[in-house]
Length: 252
Image 1 (tube, rainbow, N blue to C red):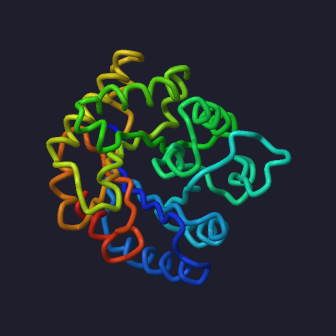
Image 2: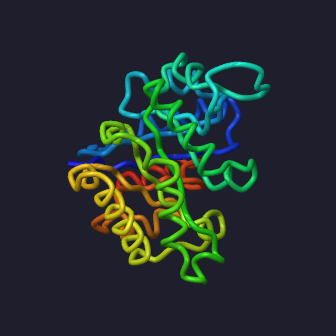
């Protein structure tokens, strides 16, 4: 049975002391929740990864990095390598987020290289993809998503998929207050699962968790998470508040 997952991407938010306080709140609150086949992941900024990893070691909260360099090491000022992430006992990395694609020019080809490097270093990947509003309005959204997944992931052998979590994020619904309807989310998630089944075995497609990322809030989470092929959420703004994040965990 594939896991349900609530993953909080803190983006460029929370100082060192603020991160400590939020982790403390979440650790206390999560003790009161029964996590039945559900994983809880937080992705603080790089400066707070080590502390978050240490503070969650004795809890059910897992920690992820928000990004990593496609290269193993070298003259890449400001970059963080997979081995650096592993060295602070973090085993998950988010790759391909729409903000990385838009603001930092990441491509399907460069992301394929990042995927390979992450897997080589035994990192689990939350792989993001999704269409912009223009693609959605033109009816090109399925083709865009198919292209992103195929170019970055379909060179992998079937064994690699046990370390892949997919995250569909309609770009037009991130930080805009807009949200894909539960029906739109389910439609795309079912399409994604079918894509994986066509390339690999149907068993692999049924086992991979597919998260929805696009302005999920306590008010709409239960309805979105109830859809058959929606296995949880990659959460932005609501992950920065312990009460809101816990409400999403309880919703799933």
